[in-house]
Length: 115
Length: 114
Image 1: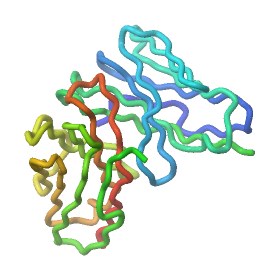
Image 2: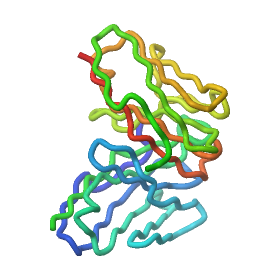
Image 3: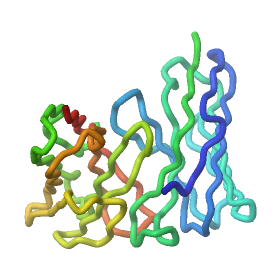
Image 4: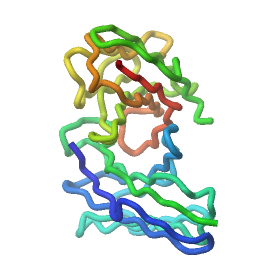
């Protein structure tokens, strides 16, 4: 079962443009994380935002969290062809059929950045 | 390179067979997680171990089992394999059990059941 749901499912942009992906989730969380997956490979952690934080930056990444709307967004600025990948939001499983630290992933947004 | 290793990278086997997937966590990480990724189900949490003990169970079938050994490596055993078990299986590790820690994923094992 999924907790997070990313939107859009697919996004195609030109190099240099900004890419925004959204994630909605269903229950209360302790934190929300974003991961990137290049085709068929392992996931790479991008950023973690805690439930008491509203915004976080890491390089060209900007993540926002709105716990009242149960939603988060990931903004990639000045995108590059190398940013082409699938992006997943993940919430902790504590309140959603899990316990401790397991992650519940959304279905992901497939980002394509054209040179 | 996340520091998490998984073997084998690819596995092709027949229905009804049994396979073992192996994972070595990052040095110092005590918690190991197993996830299954398939086209229809997405990324699903299977099971978590912490310092040798099972801590959480997700959507893991009864035909699947896992364990974490004293040296902290973990194995996922899949038996009576069915076509629908074909998927990417990921192992991840983190320093602790709590959800405030990021997880480091291995490169995955691609299982094909024919």
